[in-house]
Length: 378
Ligand code: PLP
Image (cartoon, rainbow, N blue to C red; front, side, top):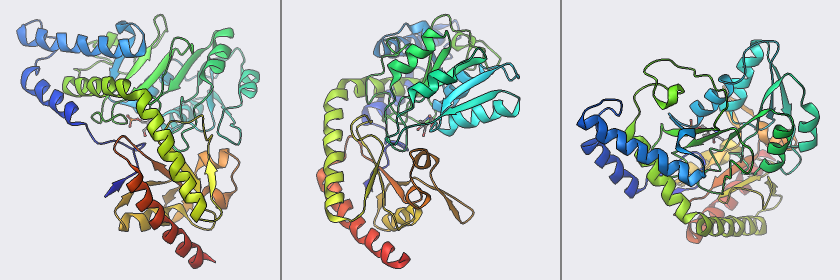
């Protein structure tokens, strides 16, 4: 089996499993209990919070553990933007549904939401964003890096616009965390969502950075854990596993970044030299290192995915197939791709254990698959 779908999820590292197993054996107490078992768990929780805060160069009071990226995004948006006619939110045109569907919910309650377009390499049009600012805007939400095409956004420029206009800035950094430096303070990010399972940690765990002083309202009420912002007994084994994975990712970041940039570049060169009419989607340099998104006009991505599954290759189609009709990817359409190009987009997301031998196998099979699907469709 060849796994080229690391933007969907990653396998859990052995070191992470060990930390989680230890937590289940030794630190099963409730961190909110005052007795010995509670104290042992609370100390571990404090260790996890401090470690994550250090990696992000923020203070530990600014870390809120959540059940993952989706919850952190929802909390950020719904905890800031009141569902009234007096509120507005600016989001990019290529947000993950964790952000765009949350914004849509607010729109149904009268909030004005403007979607800022991207250019043909996937970069948010910063000038359009600046011009869209008005006194009703309570939040700007732009993802750090896109999950389909990998493009990294100009965080510093967007952060400056937010600061100049005293608007809070939320970023979904689920795909960027652990792969590229985040610099939340330097980029003036007020709320930053991250997730564990994209960096070889367990699923169902993540965190939200909440800048000190940001008036975030909780979405759930109860025992008051996580500074009252995400109440409920913490999943300590998952949190410790997440933080272990994060430490490993940060230690390996620069080496891995170069390795994956080179490997995806190699893959692109090989594919474009043996398959005709390939379109690369997204910015070739300003991207998270393992992502390669390509359109093969004349095919439908879901069919490519199905053919590759037969060859035990895991990757992803950019298009979502609903009840027999293939919807083009909204990200590829936002890039300006025509419908035939947007339904033909496939995503390879390589990871730590990927290598040239795997790439060579995938390229060889992909060539055969694309050529036969094109023959079939012509
Ligand atoms: N945001 C982005 C950009 C993602 O890629 C994902 C996961 O695919 C999420 C949010 C959701 O994160 P989680 O699966 O931790 O809820």
